Amino acid sequence: NRPVSLQFREANTKMVFEVLARQTGINFIFDREVKNDGRTTIFVQNVPVESAIDLVLGQNQLARQVLAENMVLIYPNNAAKQREYQEQLVRTFYLTNTDPKKASEMLKTVLNAKTLFVDERASAVVMRDTPEVLRMAERLIASVDVPEAEVMMEVEVLEITRSRLQQLGLRYPEQVTISPSALGADA
Image (cartoon, rainbow, N blue to C red; front, side, top):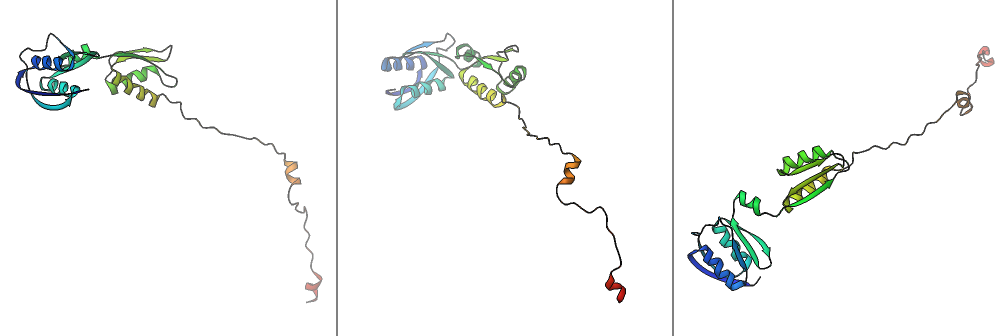
């Protein structure tokens, strides 16, 4: 993390890495496809070593992989070399609520995952990819592997007989008689 200063105009890229190696103690290993005729122009003062390395790599379409604390591999930044050198991990996702075939289809579609294995018996999906892609896969699976929504109903059944119903409340008379009133007859 100590700062370095570099001043080069159209210098051979490997020579720039040689100077960086002497200043920092970092050993640089080059892939056989890194060109010997690469040129670098860089003028930086007191920048972190990592930033200086990234600036030189960016000018020459190169990438790096840290092999040890003081050892860095430099390789061409193309898809084939990235697949060859990129760190890959294997992760098994155990599913409880989602069909493993559907989960693997989702991972293939959304993340463009190519190395997948579906174990239907164990309800699991095994995936090999970079750590970043595995983290995204973990989030995706967590978002779809949820239990289905349930509706809980509490029902109480009551039985009432009609004779009991009649005993409750008001009792209406069964007969009504109408007779002429004595007051109405005198008038």
